[in-house]
Every structure is written in structure tokens, then in C-alpha cells.
Amino acid sequence: MTQVRDIMQKNVITIEHNKNALDASLLLRDKEISFLVIMKEGKPSGVVSERDIVRKIAAEDRLSSSVQLEEIMSKKFRWVTSDTMIEDAVQKMLNNNIRRLIVLDDEKLVGVITQTDLAEFLRSKLLINGTMDNIESEN
Image (tube, one colour):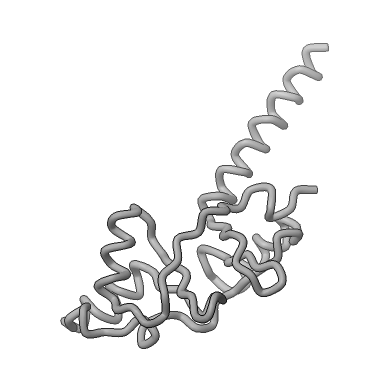
């Protein structure tokens, strides 16, 4: 059985809670990513996504340099541990209608798992299973 640790991204881009939306926007652009984990005192305290910035700043015609991240971040982020089974992580994402899960071990940020990670994993698994089925049917 595959666990989250087997497919999670370990290099998670973070930003401190006392930064503003402009800081976050620049980091998202420069790193070519779609979300950031907000850190406070060395622990995740929320997440902010491109979607948050569009809906809570751009669509309201607010000045991003004057909006603190704590004002727009999602504080109720979902998380799993690295030993969570992939099937359980997928179910948690589906049940909560979310695109990503933070991975915590002992309250420490160790990774993130996204819909893209899951799709790549499932695609590989399907290709491997299909290849194995073809080999078996030839024998």
C-alpha cells in the first residue's frame, strides 16, 4: 500500500504570517506555484492560494501591499501525516472539496500533496497495471 510520504512534495514553499499579499503574490509568481503555507512560530497557521488573492484582493480592487496575509489566508486547512494511506488522503480531499493537503508529522511541516501529485501517481499505476496485464496475456 502506498503512503502519502511516497508521493508528497517535500520542498514546500512557505511565507511568514506577518507578510502582506503583495509579498505572497511575488513569491507565487517567482516560484511558479499556486499556493503558499503560512508559518507562525515555526508551525503552519494557514494557507493562501492564487484563488484567495483573486477573490479577496483583485476582485475587490484592494491594494495588495496593504492587505496582511492573516486577513486573507485560510486558517482551517486540512492535513494528513506522512504515513496516511493514499486512498485516505484522496477521500479527505474529496470529502472536503479541496485541491491539496498539508503533510504534518509531530506538528512539523514535512510536505504537501496535491491533486496533480495524485493524478500522476494514479496514471503511473494504471500504466504499470496495464503493462503487467499485457505481459500476462501474452504468456
